[in-house]
Length: 166
Ligand code: RP5
Figure 1 (cartoon, protein in one colour):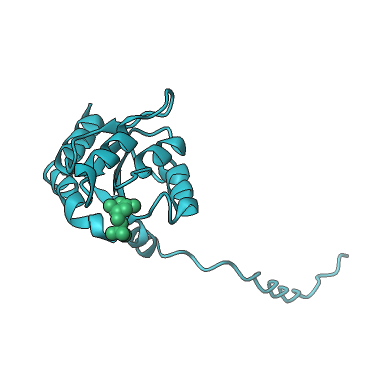
Figure 2 (cartoon, rainbow, N blue to C red):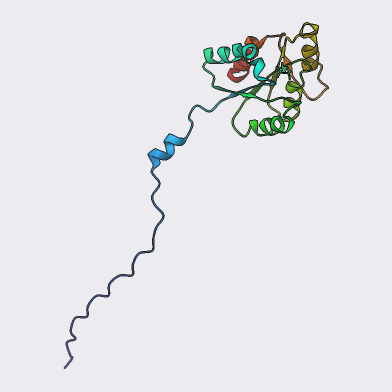
């Protein structure tokens, strides 16, 4: 005759291992910038801002997002290198670079990126802007700068929009 065993108490489950908190998806999505800039407008000095503003206006009119940074090829060479080196990875498609006097910025930008670079020579206090024009336009083979007119920032914006829409 088999013995009927007493029902054994069910062992209590092991305490669950702590899990990582569930991320709040809505919050995460709020942090994502949906309107990432496609054009980087850079210039050698704060004093160039009024001359470069028409580039931003043209891009705004074309519905193209952009960002604006001040960095000088001569005064902040490392910053220019880093910005241009990372530009494509950050999603930029075109760089507009404006500078006056010995305007190295467009050429140096082009040396550090394979994105199209549009140079804007800015009229300074001497030489009628020819210094900046020649510095921007006389690039050595293999390092291109699409140079617009002296103080031609509007066309730089229009051209950048055309490149992006092409
Ligand atoms: C250039 O030198 C700048 O692009 C600017 O046009 C010019 C004068 O610069 P600030 O002395 O006004 O800073 O590098």
